[in-house]
Image (cartoon, rainbow, N blue to C red; front, side, top):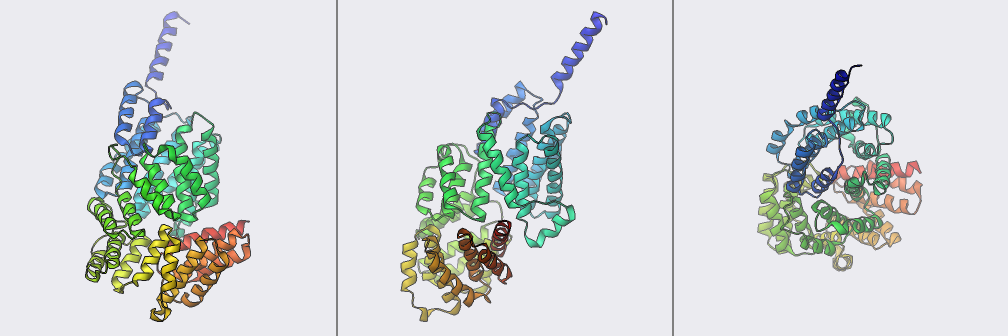
Length: 496
């Protein structure tokens, strides 16, 4: 081989390597990823721009840009933003497709992008498109897992996918049958735990820890809040409160789900308003919830209005108007209560359980019993003794049948939280017996909670019985969320 030919081949190889697409996990990428998960998108873009100059062929760049756009759309629920951003998705996927087929990141990135935009499409009611993208993500990630079984990021996305599949409501299960994809919550949780353990001990993937912790936290909090897991979660998140709004949100959510309202309010007060976070108006809604739960009505109304003025989406709008109405009712202003309940019918959509319940109440026109309403709010905030004191002072002779059922249900809930399980069982059974034919959620949730108690007591037979009771009841309040939890409980005890 001549010297000139060798030089020519070498130059050709250098040019090919120089312009080939690649994946580099360096300081810019890790910092950008961290900033994205902190909702500090401007800082993330500075890192991304720096990476474009240094390593313009790094395929992590379009992936990071897509992650920012996905979070903007899902947090804002702004349909105009969704329409404008979605057009960029195919371009970014084409950039990733330039990777060599031997790259473990190729199908991982394309699968993740599909899953992200499946989630966005589902949020805006585009169920057919969402199903197609979930199917595409599932196939790509399963294939990638077969080819690269030791590539731990696969476990993160597959974990999320399997959990999503396991949580599909009964009314949409036909879609899963149609596209032949399977998964369970337990399977997904195991995959996330495995990924988290590896990332904690592997410096190559340590930047993924916050993301996995977020998924693990949201699943636990929305299915079966565990006080011990909440303590663990908060301990892991504490150090990031001042610089990570997403972690702060997760901690607030964990506190609120577990009756730690005062701690949540304290954490709200620590959010640094000088940091340029992406607007997260749902936090204003949650702030209103916290104030309402300790009966600070004027402060609650202020936060709910802030949410309603700024938020561009449709979810929790009806519920926010109902909560404003409740605040007015607690202040003994019935006229303002009725006025705000009319707004429930005028604004928002009834896509989620909270909004469906608000709309039903607005159409029904019944004014809640103020004392029972106080108990509900105080209980949600973790003020159990105050709630119990109010309940004990209520004269049953002055209550309707539905209100008596609610009173017994709330007594059961308080006893349950105070770990007086025998008393909780008594009130839950009274609730089921008296309320099983009513459309309200009390009997169904009482059955769900009885299943939870017996599951804790390792009595799988009784736990399964009450989960089935819950699933057999006909009710129309919070139906989807209660039934999903009962189905997951039934799977847990059936697998043991």
